[in-house]
Length: 107
Length: 107
Image (tube, rainbow over all chains, first blue to last red; front, side, top):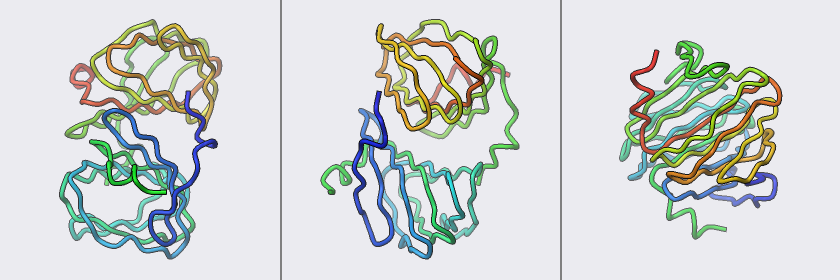
């Protein structure tokens, strides 16, 4: 059993910090994001699923912009450009497949 | 954008119904479980991550029994036996990797 509250936060970019769990096939990211913080457009080899747990997050996937709240799920295929901005303080939950090896070296 | 509320529930076993999202590499299951409902011990080829969103769920993984609440994460490796029982009405969130092809034919 993993107790999320025992995992230290890692600041990844300005306004974005997360707790990460790396399993054998996936990385889970439990984000806390500050209102107004910008996620620059980027892409990566991982399939990504993003969900808002609290707040409102404006996400642009492949040029299409929508505002996500709890109950909305974004599926971002590998190598598809995405970015966004937190419209409020947010809690986000991301799943990456395969593991984000680049995140293992953070913190 | 996927609106979870638009996905119909599928009853999988007695007391366990879920909304499923199948991506290219994963299946996500958003469960509603009735108090007292038993998940018989079983195993499968998929890695599984299980989280409780609401309620208390007693989960046994490879013979080790613990009570899960929000903020606790279970990582169940492929082919490891697991089962459990809902101690209260529960909302659970499961991630399976790879896709649960067997769930696609349900409902």
